[in-house]
Image (cartoon, rainbow, N blue to C red; front, top):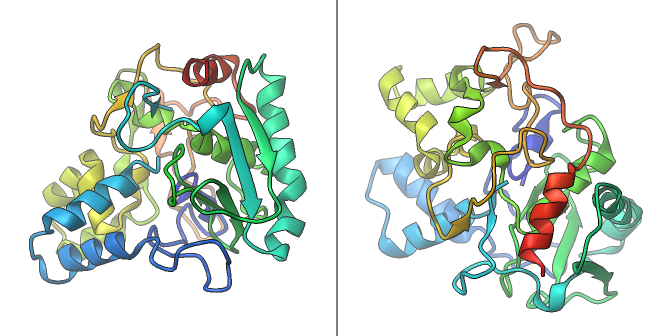
Length: 307
């Protein structure tokens, strides 16, 4: 989603779109209640500090699965690889089709350039069936994608004008990665052995600190707990390690993965028009090499999912 949820907002920061902002009502094919349970859970926790109910907790955890780690093709619960090795997609409305149709094709071509895709195919349908299709919608100022396939709950929201990786084809390739079944590489539990996450440099860090009455220890816990960060509506949810939810983290950490953020993504500015601070660096504090394309190891992982 922003790149998974927040990444798209780099117009003025990495966020800019609330993680629970739903698609407009006229975006046909998308449930109006898509994010209801997550919104209610966040309001419950942030508004009056009541305990999140078991049902709300389930739906929040389902939203967390919208962040590469990959789905586990052998796990029959929750999100799955696309049936028959075919990602079938449609556009929610004519405006979305006009703006994004060619870009979806271009994004898949970026994957094909990186290696031989053995089995996975993508196919466009003219009419949306939310139980069977990835429903793609253009929404200004927001980009986010559900991970893998789950009947009735598979969507991509995309703004082709957002900065992201600096190239709209690369941005789309990243989002397609989520749709294929990839989570963020920098959120692997073992990512801390390869890179550093400077939470204090996040664009919304000061806002969350203020919300927590200046308690840095409390915010530090949010920086380290992706589940709690999501409840708080804190962009650390896109950086903190993912908990084990039946994910497949086999294979080595891939620093060159299309599913890894660049250093400055989500960072605050020192001045309103100045450069952004680095959120992700190597273990020595140096900026990471910018991601500009799909890596061949990403394709290897894709072929592991679809075989």
